[in-house]
Image (cartoon, rainbow, N blue to C red; front, side, top):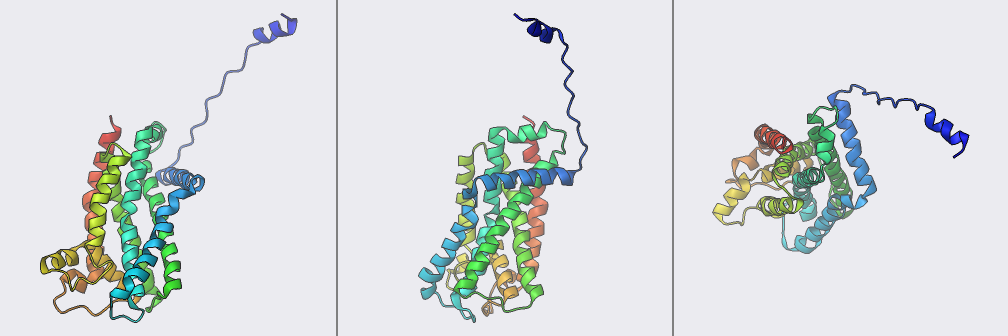
Length: 286
């Protein structure tokens, strides 16, 4: 052993400094989690398939396969009438995205790791909600561009057109709370897939999303017209000028779709958000 080696052993090493903890607020912490989730999407772009390829596939399939057999009394025809329904269905599936992402984070212990940091516990849910809403917004842009190619147009003014998109995003925000609730309650991603497919698909199809409700059996028509998805779809069609004349006996939600859609968004958020937060806190308190 050389003298140099002996000297290095005897020389005391400087103590490691603790990293400085910078106090941040809920907004900054939530944005950090949003950036983390978006970076995740950037590294795995296949996560965007559900808001890019899938909606385009639905638009083209329904427009060109079923469109020839479904007649609607509107200027742009079935293709223009259809687009609001496809968008309503896609934004409803925002709950699916949140539930799967949250359950995956819970399974992998990522949520526990985040909660061990000096951050507000609510930042985990706020960050997840914002990133999921941004994720769904990409789908709305993709479908709007696809719609322009197949003949869809907005025939009203800018304010009404913007209100249509605001209602869609508001609906997505309400659906996110359902996703947080389901994602916090389920123990695996497979269970989330089963629950969400079994509920969201019937809800989005049992409405006026892809076809008029006039020819449905009376009991089924009542269910479809009181389905909140029908209110949203009808509201967006009216705001974009692609609606058709309603039958005289149409249910109240279809006659006043904007008011009912806002009411549904508020009601779902007020009822489901506390349940989702309570379930999430119980799950992460284990």
